[in-house]
Length: 207
Image (cartoon, rainbow, N blue to C red; front, side):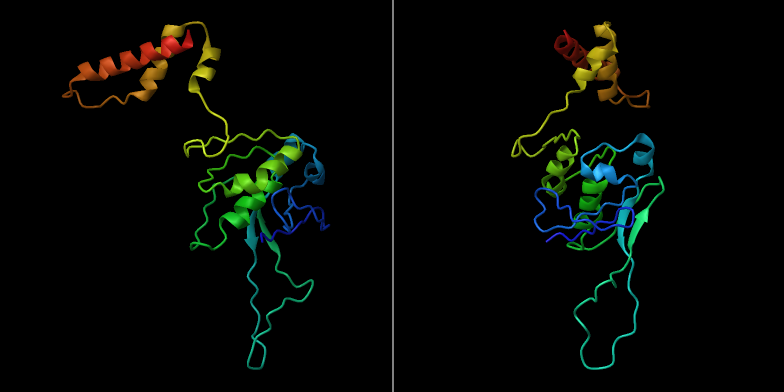
C-alpha cells in the first residue's frame, strides 16, 4: 500500500486519489484549493515544493531484548520538502521507494505542469485520474507497442505553425535530424542526399 501523508496549511486531510486504494495523499503545495479540483495560481505553481522524503529518526534503542515495532501517534518523522529550482537526483537500491515515494507523491500533489519518464507506468497508473479530476490534461506517450491507449507526438504538427515556407521548414527539420561531421575528409555526398531525402519527405507530409 502506498503510504502518503497529507500536509496542507498545517492540516491533515484524507484524500486518496483514484487508483491509490488506501493511500494517504501528500499535499505540500501552498494552495490547498489545488487539491480540491481548482487550478493553482501561477505564483503558487512556481512556489510549490517537491517532496523528498522523511527525516531519519535517531533515537537510543530501548533497554531490553527487543525493540518496539510500532510508532506512537504524533511521533512520525517530519516530511522534507525542497523549495529551490536546482535539478535533483535520487540514489537508492531497487525497491527502496524511489517511485512510490517522491515520484508518486509529486505526481499527485504538484499543481503545475509535470513531465515524467515513467518506464514501468506506475506514476501514470496511480496519478493520471487524480490529475484529470483536478481539471488538468494528462497525455501518455506509450513506447511499448500500444499496450496502453495513449497519445502521439508528431513534430510536423508544430512545424505547420512555423509559416507557409514549406521547403524552408522541411529543410530545417532535416538538418536537425542529420549530423554533419566536423572533419572535411568525409564524403558529404551521402550526407547531403540523406538530408535532401528527409527534407522531401517532410515537405510532402506538410503539404
